[in-house]
Length: 397
Image (cartoon, rainbow, N blue to C red; front, side, top):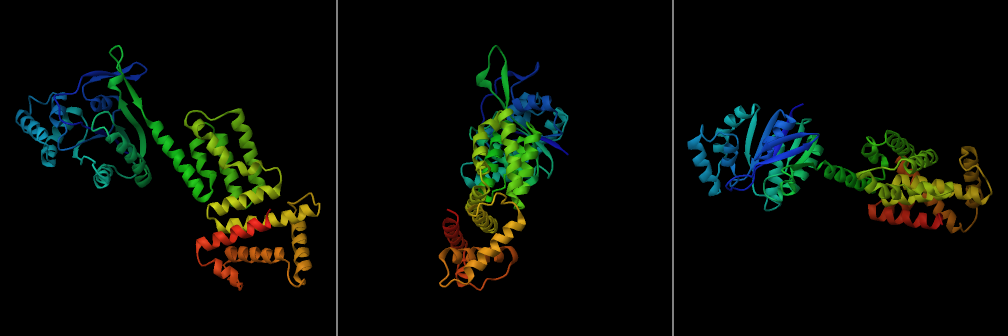
């Protein structure tokens, strides 16, 4: 795995101001260009410097004491930067000297200014072209144009998702916070953690799998991560009773050991998304899950849980106290069908029961129902959602 540091250069000016950057724990680096100090601090395998045609490439050479060795190149580069016409050829010619001085491979890359969506996408593309799949990357957002840190954060997310890159840090040298001669260094990795939580919430709202939260709490609480994975497995295999038990354990654990940091920020959201298990009766839990699945567009599980909720309701109406008993559930179902099948005209409730049963069978087994209402509902996602919503609303009060 290659570890690459990506750093940005700012717009052409006289020079950067020298500072003593404080990494904490007594570790400090004195430099005018933070990227060079960060290189010495984290010791990456390679360095990629990104800048525009008007960035201070000449100041970089001066910071490395290369100005006396490359006087002609420095003059040309200074003019190019001032006139906003630095070329890739100029930078490619200088990269070996910069790499030799720093003792590691260096790439000097031109990027656009990021003035519109096309240029912003191009910046991400150029960054990605320098990183191999599965590599590690650290980003320095100290210098460069003021909007580039936001692009750097997006690039970190992009590289993780598209290339499976490990992002080891998102650093900022806070020159404007200098006190007593020391400039604090911030690792903004928490921004990526916030993005991960936001993405997990979005993923859950799409498909209802709260197992996506497990990796986010793993470091703080392996036990909570395990309970999330187990309960998600039980729920997705249509065993809400077992899922409910694990979520009760999770509630107890998080009450005793609350999440900290970014986890604490999203804890109320997580709790709200898992609220179905707090219903005190199986019928209400099944009803809540059926509605939740329907909201997520999971029509199969909405039909499955809606049907089972109706059977549970029948058992409760008959005073049965063990709605998890499979034999009793089958008996109640068969008796309900036998009792209503011969009635003419058929009761409305039984008609809707048959529609839900046949739709469930079609979605689970792929058998096309002969009922015209079901065939019509299956014409589009919108029709199927409305059809199921009406059945659940009427059968599961």
